[in-house]
Amino acid sequence: MKILAISDQESKYLWDYYDKSKLEGIDLILSAGDLAAEYLSFLVTLSHAPVLYVHGNHDDCYEQKPPYGCTCVEDQIYDYQGLRILGLGGSMRYSAGLHQYTPADMAWRVRRLWLPLVKNGGFDLLLSHAPAAGLNDGEDLPHRGFSAFNHLMDKYAPAYFVHGHVHMNYNPAQKRWDRYQNTTVVNAFERCVFEVDLQALLEKRRRGRSG
Image (cartoon, rainbow, N blue to C red):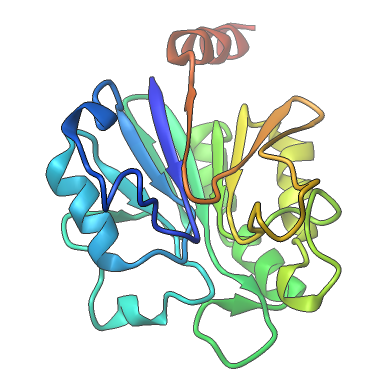
């Protein structure tokens, strides 16, 4: 499964200089937040891939005008062709925005998901806006990561963690790809493409259940 991950900055390569060949072969588009609703609607309309999204800290406008044709996966485990996606958007609380949370708030959101996590036997991909604590996050309050995400990766060992919020142009040393134990971490800033071996994930899950 080929996935296009996007966040924080609309890609001129995709939007201003669109060509249908640029989205050929993309099976799924994941938005990690802080993108214009029109941009997401544009991508879902002109590609054959669904767009799943979580909110960024600047996405309060989605309340009045959500991305047309796209699916919000906040606070749930969304199964797409067998890929279990857990959505937890928003950033650390630094003002009165709708999609800002204290560490305790985010931990409570995770606790509320205990039943879906049990029923689904975990998840394969964590989609968030903010990064995890101490994992390529920022030192300033708005860009600090959530330790709740570290705890989720510790307990469920998802194959992927896709986040945004920390712009690649903030710091030349900012990583696009990283690793946290058994989880591949992807900074979705602007755009990046990666492939998921879905059959391998499904086989691993089957072996875990049979064992």
